[in-house]
Amino acid sequence: MIAVLPKIDMVIVNRADTYEGENTPTRQLLDLIEKVLEARTGPSVANPVLAPLEVGSDPKITKVSNDRLTVGEWKYPPEPLGLPSRTEFQITAGQGHLVCYSPTGGTFRLYLQNDGTLHEEDSHRRYFPVRDDTGSLAGIADVGYIMEAALTAASSGDGNRAARLLRVVEGRLGREETLAFEVVNVVVDLLGGNGASAERSVRQLSERFDPVEVERWVNRIGYRLMRGGMGERALELFEFNTRVFPKAWNTWDSLSEAHLGLGNTEEAIRAYRRALELNPSGVRRRGRLVQAAIIAACEGNNDRAVRLLKAVKGEETVRIGIANAVVNLFGGKETSAERAIREFLEQFDPARVEREVNEIGNWLMREGQEERALELFEFNTRIFPESWNAWDSLGEAHFNLGHKEEAIRAYQKSLELNPDNEAAKRMIARIKGGI
Image 1 (tube, rainbow, N blue to C red):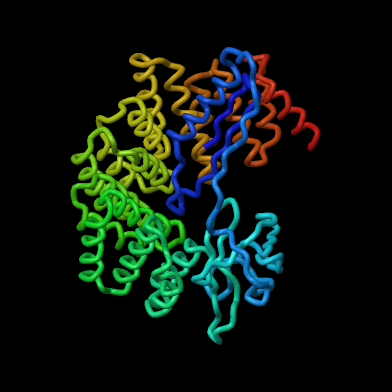
Image 2 (image 1 turned 120 degrees about the vertical axis):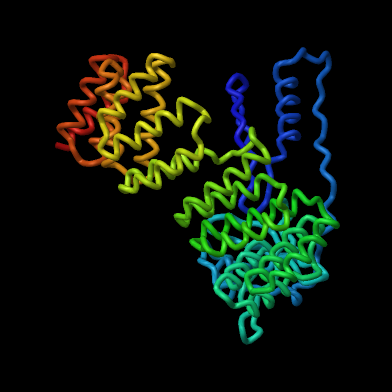
């Protein structure tokens, strides 16, 4: 989270790796911002004094004899984990502690703990020794990478390797880490074909921890599998989550998204409708069905596009209606698409309608559908010929496709309608400079 406070020249940044289950402490940050604003803009104090910052001592900062410290240079994460290398760790000995340098993380100290783990100063991150097949030290890794390596192994069918990796951290975790670790164990069981054992374990976890947190951790791992290109494994996990937590709308919502990614249209719609039944106002990804419908139309699969849009019919009338018009346009029904948009102009703010069409075009460009985006932007300039923004977007689409003369004409038209469009001026100069 980034909080920008321009009146007092301050930016507050909180780094949280949400993929690893970290959350932004929103309430505490807002309290901090309030205190800062009060201190900077509140009434003056008669006799201000500097108050020392109270920082408690860190009991994990240790000092040991240097003969207990192992130094070396390794890839991070270490090679035995089987994950892509992101940086290197160069570890040298300090006075009773280790000094670690990485090109991406800078220099920080590591303190050896009684259980053999290493405690990082300031961040309090904990690293575990990782050994290769011969038993030799091959580097260090935090619990997140070790769990990710175990999940990767289990997903590829190597349950034994996954179990060996998890034993590296077993019994040496705090309560917060324990929940994530136990859920990973459940997933390893499930992906290894032990569905009954996995279900029994996750129900026991729900008695020891907040069931909502358990369900969310299972979901997070599912999304991690999806991002790693393991859609079928993610689907298996999301289906498992709906069986264990059938009343959680979020599990059904995620299941719908997994089916969408695999092209399972009817299954995606059924899961989506179940999520909607459980929480009519809280389904976050109804837009996913609309986007999937538009992409289907881009690829010529109008049947799938129509079925997906029927599932969300009646919701968010303007957006769904415009999506229907876009699907018609890409399906060769330009007259029908134009008629639908003009009917919307009689019911809704024309600026909103133009903006919605434009946003779909911008999204298509980000998705790599430049030709379809161009088609949509040209359509938008025909409906809204007096919109400088529509012409500006058309110019951008032409430029991205290498159509320099067409891009200049579109940008010039945008400038005619809005002489203050500095971006168009810069783009024209840039294009002419390169011609």
